[in-house]
Image (tube, rainbow, N blue to C red):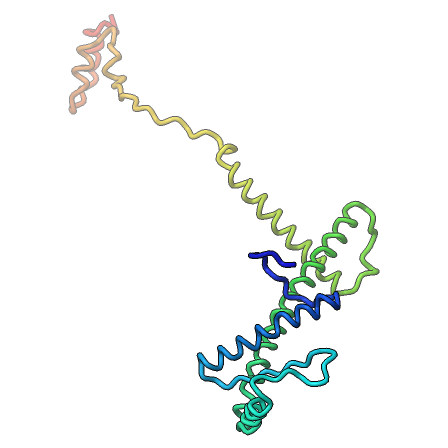
Length: 221
């Protein structure tokens, strides 16, 4: 017994008594809905139900009306008759495409797990060679290894670039401006200041004048 508000499962009823009880209960509802559809929408509706254990099928609204609906359908042009079949064919193609995509996805997942298992066995030493594998599997394993190596190299490059600033030597200190000192002005001669004043001119003195200057400066007696 289905409780009120509980959703009925649309599935085959295994129990024979329950199945017959459901047929007796639901067939009148179907006939009622067929009548409502015919009256409210003004469309030809025919219902034929073959009940088990009955010699004659249940026909609604009458055998003549059902025969008339079937005759109209048979008299339709071939193109109109095939419209529904064409839609059904397109629907089946869509279902087939979805199933093929799911199958391809499952096969891809299985192949990925097989490759991981081969790599794990090789790393752990449980597999010594790949000679017993088909060429497609060997190619897939080699491609996976190449992808892993490229990922490792890219990660190492990132780590090197991140650590590069810490490994560089510190920058040199900023240059300090040293004032220029006139060393000649700082040196004061002990003797002969008059001599430097005389020699500062552009005219060079004669030998006698030089000797007199040296004596004056105290360099000669």
